[in-house]
Image (cartoon, rainbow, N blue to C red; front, side, top):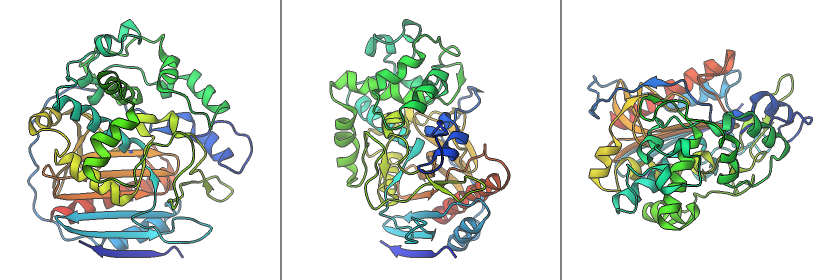
Length: 411
């Protein structure tokens, strides 16, 4: 039986099919698009205020029991962990194991792939530079990145951060997928990856629609590099890690993970679950999903990010202007999209954050606008609203857990 633990204290897939082991069969079925999360269907832009939803208090959920039920499901993840923090008080709930071989329990200091929650980090870098006057939300690709296609030139930083840019998603390119199949452990540069779509025009007029695209956060990070003449790694360190005290967060260049880590698994019927933790190089996801962190560090990040500790309140007000759109996978409650952040209006109130998914991992993080109350939820399998059968049932249970964790943080 998978273990459970409760502790109290103060959102890439291999497409080779080169046999089993190291994620061969399962990765082929997942498809290359899953590296940093599939793109969502576009939605019309509708602006709305960033007000909190008013709802009657709900009964305090039993998150320990809910997580146990999740990992025991058919196609449930081997491991799951939820961190709920209210002010200085933190409660950690975990179930299952971090590694099917050792059967060791999941811990708040286990490393894991952040998937698309890493998009909030590239947003944090860009918005911190906007706050300091080094970048402007109205800066365009033509001004900051003139080496990119002229057809993309009028796209602004604001539109890239809000996924209203119309930029084609490089991870959907057939040429990209074919390259990935043959070079799983390579370390391609962001410029190289964008070349796969350099001949593509915009999918729609910038600002007219919402469509989630992994290209957007590459653009935001590249603009930050161009404005400062510093690497994205260096900017993460100076603008995010050090200010928030993140000591266990990094952006690997290859497929390896720091130890100890939460192993990520995917089903491979009729065989057992396959460990896909270190199959694909993080360079393919870079600023859209390549970061590695721990549940404890992720909690620190979302509290500081949602609480505007990295940029001014004036910049935060511009960040929290929302359009219709959901994160990938969809988060709890009613979703809408700000600048590298999503609003989740739940039955217990409103929180701000991001989700992520990549082979082996599904992530959710959110906090109140002042950053004082927060929740993170991480599981060691990619389960999304695009899943089917038992795995879709597992995702629906996970989404209920996320909503209940928000209630636990806000109640």
